[in-house]
Amino acid sequence: MEDAVADYLKLLAGRRDRGEHVTEHYYRTVEGQLRNYVAPTEEHRAKQPEKTRIIFDGGIGAVKLSQATAKVVSDFRDRLREAGVGVVTTRRILGSLSRVFQNAVGNDLMAINPAANIRVTGKRGEGSKKVVPPSKSDLAAALAQAKGSLAVRMRLSASAGVRASELYALRWKHVAFNAGELTVDGRVDAYKNEDTTKSVAGIRQVPLSSAMLAELRKWKDAAKSSEADDLVFPDSKGGFLDHKNILKREFRPLLTATATKAEEDGRKFKAFNWHALRHFAISLWIEAGLQPKTVQTFAGHSSLAVTMSRYGHLFPSDTHRNVMDQISSSIFGDGAQMAHDAVESL
Image 1: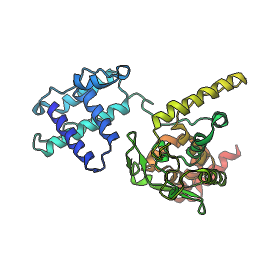
Image 2: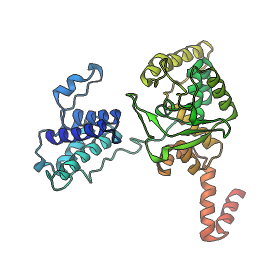
Image 3: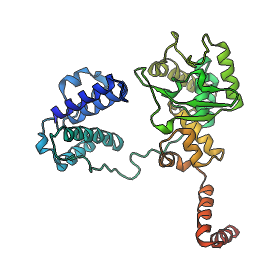
Image 4: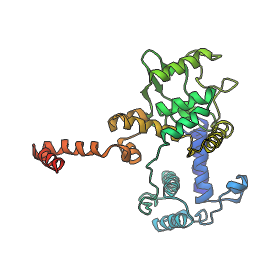
């Protein structure tokens, strides 16, 4: 298995170097999953920062490919869960492991992929992706403390629902002031490599409010470079912003200052992470009455199922009930509406 992992990582590295839809971020993520869990090595562990170093001794690096059965994989899965690895992370690790096996099958080193049908389940609610957006008052309090570029970036993220990686890839050609919309068609990873969106559905146009357009116009007028291909939010050298630096130097200090101000004023403030700005935007679209399919399109989700699994609980229950009545009416005629009216009269 150690050799199979090394072969697969070599394959990924080649695709990365050739620019074949494998970013540095993706490569390092997969490498971490395989080298921290599947086939851990002391050499890889030594490269990790001591505070975040992962020690997992239940790997299968020494297992021969001829002995890599479904039972071996399921036992490995169970050891991951017993070590406290979450459902979602375990699924991702097994996904990378499955691709290692598939590569070995393609190289005639194995006959079948033993991880192909291994499932990961958890307790009810464990690994749930449902989100809770920040409150309007908490966001307003943070925005009141934000200044300059940070304030504009936060407002755009909280109104257009763009991910941080998409925000940093925006160029002025993506802002259509006359049409009143923002085009999202790319992203920047943690290593400042520009790439396409996470999925085809991620390429989208999102309407912007008059207030947001006015703020962007003001920001453009004050920009040093505002040609079509110039970045909307560049760093001091005109390149891509570094999200880790943004969080460390701007966003987290802002939240600390906001919490201090709230305490002085005798108010409560609940801090939130940057991605919560996207959640806030999507929750506002739902509150405004946009249909689930429209929300999916504006959010750039790969499927409606993704939208509903994460935000379905935010849609008004009355809307769900009305939709079910409409479906029932096509099957039972007026019976469903009559039943609904009868209940309403009670």
